[in-house]
Image (cartoon, rainbow, N blue to C red; front, top):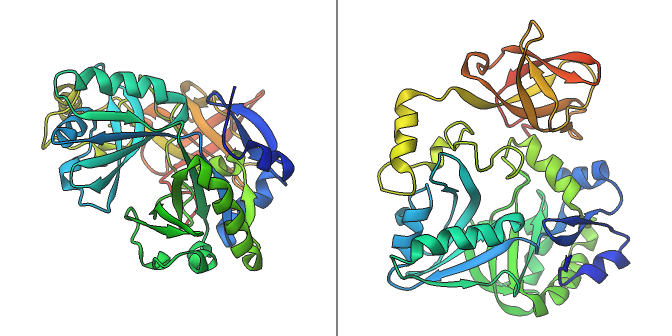
Length: 361
C-alpha cells in the first residue's frame, strides 16, 4: 500500500485511514455529515494526492491528446482546463480526466488514482505512432482541494494571485503559501466552489500547514474522501468505477457534452453510430420518496416491481436528508418524473427519476 506525503500528518489529526486505489487515504476525521456541511457552508481542505498526473509535451502533444480524449482540446487556451474522457475501442470509458494547457505545447492530464497504470498504457499505445513526449509525474506531485464558498476569501492572504478572480475551469501558475510556483486551479468535485493546488511532494507539508493556519478564523477543517463522495453525488458527478467504467458509453452516461465529433478520436465512429441510432439505456438520477439509503448494486425496478437496472451510486444526502442515487435504466424509464423502485433489503421503496444536481445550493 502506497503512502501519500502527508500520511503521518493525517494520522496525527485523527483521520481514519483506509486503503483506496492502492494508497492509504484519509476517509474521515470527525464524521461524514459534519465534514460535508463544512464544505457546503464554509471551507474545507481535502488531500487528494493519490490522483495521477501525466505531462504531455512537444509539437505532437495536442495531436496525441486529440486522439485519445473525447473532448476537443484544440479549444483550450493556456490557463484553461477541460473535463474529458478516454474512450476505449469497444464503446466504454478507460477513464475520465481533466486536461490542463500549461504552455502552448505542454499539457497536464489529471487522472483517477485507480487507473494510473491503465491510462498510461492506453495513452502510450497510441503515442507509439505519434511521438509526443510523455512523463508520469504521479509519484512526484501532491494535490490539495480547498473547497467551499469561503475558500477564496480564507486563502487570499496566502497568494498574490486574485483567487476569486480565477474563472471556473481556469488556472494560474503562481505563488501560494510562500511556494513560488504551484498550479492554482478553479476546479474541484464538490459543487461548492474553491480551487485545487498542485505542488511537489516536498512542498505540500508547508502548504497544508499554512492553509489550516490561514483558514482558522473561517473554521476550516480537514475533510476526508467519504465526504468528497457525498458532495460529488449531490451534484450528480460521475465517479469512475461506479457510474462509468470500461463498459459504459459516454453517451449513455450523459457525457455527450464532452464527446465532440468534430475530430477523429478513439472509437469516434462507433460512438457516432451509437448517437445516431440512439442509446438503449441512460444514467439517471433518482430520489427516494420514503426513508432509506440506496447503495451501489441495489436493484432498480419499474413501477410494477420488475428489475430494470441497478444503483451505481447512492447515499443519504447530508444536505437534504433523503436518499439519492444514480443508475442505468432503459431509455423508456429515463424521463424526468418517471416512478421507479429501489429494492432495499426486502422492501421495494418508491423513487422518482430526477435531473441532477440533487443539491441546488
